[in-house]
Image 1 (cartoon, rainbow, N blue to C red):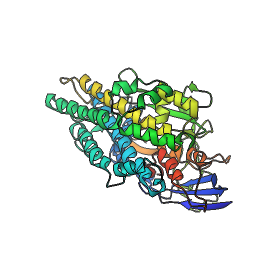
Image 2: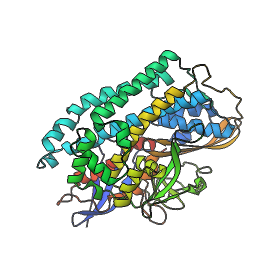
Image 3: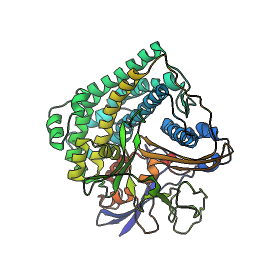
Image 4: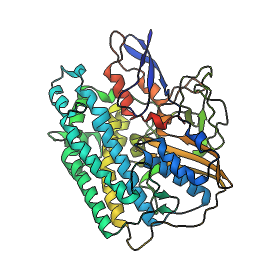
Length: 480
């Protein structure tokens, strides 16, 4: 038995370290460490309530809108407000654009460059993959970066700027969109769709989203030209469906609020039994037994964030969120499984959550978002308001639950005299990269790393990188 530490990881937002216990060339135990403490929850306490709309987005520079949406939803819950329908559509478009941009960034910038490493030089596909995906020099970067930049022009139209916009408010959005701007929105969305169809999938989005089984996916991808098909071929050669297998339930808070129902449903999905379940928000707790934190209330609505760098047994600034005392995996895979996507559920039924299926879910979700953004843009009524300026109460407690690109994001807020008395945040990477709890149960990534092969001399192989990156960690969102 030997122990090694891997990190800090490159191409990860924020600092991350992983300690691995290795026996006979295989990981038998893992501890995931978030070594950076942020302090945002403490910064927010005592401030005027609307300061949350300024400070919360600054938790992260790549999922800023998600943090805004959670803060908005929490304040909206306190005050009992309802957004103007136009503001709801506009916010959904901006949020979906950010999440789709994050998915593209993950695939092209964070994940695929690992296959261009010299570690895979012996594989027949390596020369073409290296030419396509080598970091900073591959041909893919010259295509995806302009496409991503074009997509994010949506932020200027809807929110004035990105990141850290103040356009998102409990009553909707502050910037009205005229006819010319809607035409520009539809043009940007059409360009994004064109990029997905020509470069990512090599097929119409409707045809891709009509795939309902693993067998249909295999049949579809034969002879297909596109980066998705390239990934599938690599994943099969490397058996990525056997790597990074999750052993926990999947959760989604529901994504993109609609006038009648969200685009993606809320709930739980048990991969072991292929069973969907209702989500009980009141069952969420935070365990700090292995975090550098002092003990406070376990319920997020009553908890405080009190650092304790000398806590015995602590090995991360990340708390351990639990649902019914169990770790939970979140992300695009969880969202699509909970929402009932037939292809994703079939893949999970066959092989469980794994590296391959997480990437597939992320790309398929991007296709669904492209179609949804077009629909929302066409539903905007140009002669109706974007903001409902109803009076606020500024007293009481509320919860803001949204889905960021990486999974379920929750903001718990309590106001007194329109000032923030208490604020707690549980981010997606907090769920996925949590440390052990008081019962010694490992977090989702810690469990998924068990069984990963490493180098014969104990040096972590690229397989460890694949498992970690399959969750698309954003460590700056993780510890507050």
